[in-house]
Amino acid sequence: MMGREHLINLHHLRSEGVAVVAIADPHLPSQQEAEKLAHSFDWPLQVFSSHKELLDSGLCDVLVVSTPNMTHFEILMDIISHPKPHHVLVEKPLCTTVADCRKVPDIIDNAYVIVEFENGSRGMLDLCMFAEGSKNEQEISVVGDIGKGEAFVPESTVRWGTRVEGRDGVKTLKAKDDRIKYDGLHHGSSYLEHLQFLSAVRAEGAQAPAVDLHDGLISVAIGVAAQLSIEKGQFVTIEEVMN
Image (cartoon, rainbow, N blue to C red; front, side, top):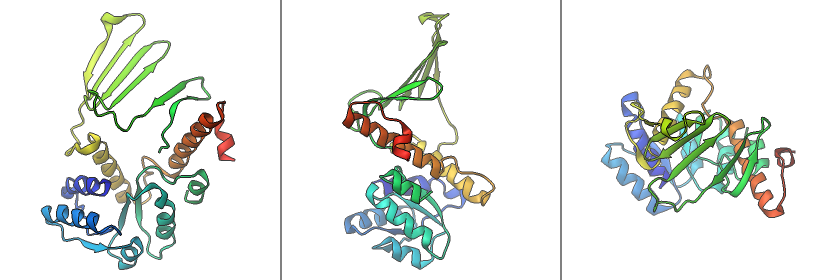
């Protein structure tokens, strides 16, 4: 599914010179679905049954890894060790363990785990992958000394107010990004992800990626720490999982 979602997003970047020339998938039904979709875009795909065959073909300059989470590490190692260098975009999580993330240089779901930062801020994620029955899939709330800010997806609404002005002073903004040509399953975020990745590829190292391997490592470490906190029923530091 995610592979096809990437195909659609990349199709909407065709005006930027982007074209998908090959896919690798060991699952025949998935191959056929991808071929059917690519055919509707007039993209003749070369199809491979393994990522190693695709790498050896030399057809691709840029790779998108959107395979099952537990396969990311092995595939990345094969990409990195291949004689031909590639630009790589990896679906989250980077890997499923901190140890594997260190070797490569999002998130593991958690349940009501409070994350405390050095500056005293605290955050909590209540994640349910089956929340389609509500008006908004994502509801973000930030509360501080000054006031409160809220964001809602896919409603694309932002609300903020201060403690001084109270409820009557709450302002509402309808967010819109004119760069997005395709909303897709992630309300435009995947399209922007590819747009930023394309910019980094074209910069040829002069521009850092918006999200790098260190970010991937830290995101997995936070998830592992949260899982340990649930299992132990106690406070867990990032250092405990990073060392």
